[in-house]
Image (tube, rainbow, N blue to C red; front, side, top):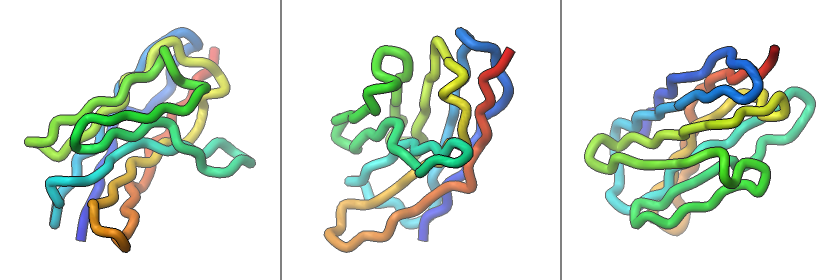
Length: 118
């Protein structure tokens, strides 16, 4: 079992920055992927960024150049630095974890709300 605890959400003006953190605990495999998804009102959940334990990253096109994902594997923590925030970034952001097993279960945090508004 894995538990994910997010922090860092809040209200920010357009052009501002926020940093999200997600700490994983429990039965953590050393080889895994962690990342961030978001779900805006009335829309489907979408991948924002993910990072494999080996260092490979993927970003949604909409956030490339503005968001940066990073990991501290020793702390089982993933971060999302969000810069140049836009109103369309407003969403609930969910931390994600999956280990390397073929049929591994997806784990999700409870979500943290990011609101970008003047």
